[in-house]
Image 1 (cartoon, rainbow, N blue to C red):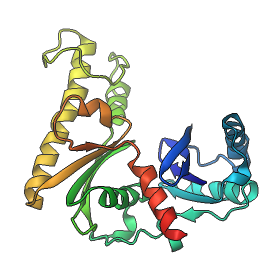
Image 2 (image 1 turned 180 degrees about the vertical axis):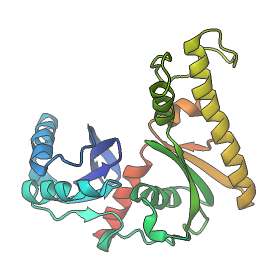
Image 3 (image 1 turned 90 degrees about the horizontal axis):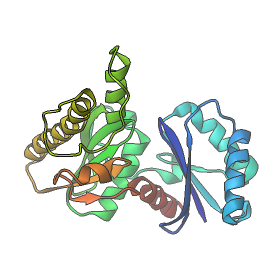
Image 4 (image 1 turned 60 degrees about the vertical axis):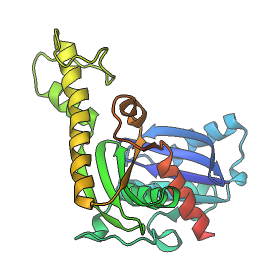
Length: 257
């Protein structure tokens, strides 16, 4: 059984997989100071609730965009599972894709793993949109090469900035406006329209420009927590694949066997 660990800027996701089938997943807030022992106390209880013994896990792969978190996750793997984890992008878990950008080493592990998974699952030229702490737009060509992309503030970051830098605007939840009107009649509706439909317009505009620049038919794959919500209100996504990152980690782990 594979334990895949995806350490993002906001959460660390732990998932159990058999092949590419996800059997369980859990998440905990990202804290680079959290020790391997603290992870273990939390994770071992969750495994026990699922009836999974630590000895049933025979392979672990870690992907992180928080470098300071890696050491403590490796401690967890070595001390509590007696496994030296694979690290996405390193050694046997190298991405094995061309990274055709100015600074290949600056490509985040999350974006590289998404590129690996998207190319394996979907043919042709691709734009991968990942809704995380930041929203990223990544171009993967028909050969599987990473060609570049866009980094935009995530919608929650945008909302935090709006609320945190104004004196009277309230905190609101991210959800679709109740109707299609873009003229709000109260403060909360006006904020929601600005954040939600403004974000949709941003995505539609950027993707249209990217497709025009690529110049070939291009499929758009959306992943991340808000992909399903936005997919219900725009037709720009050809595929919604919430588990793209975990699929990518499973692919890298399979290649390393």
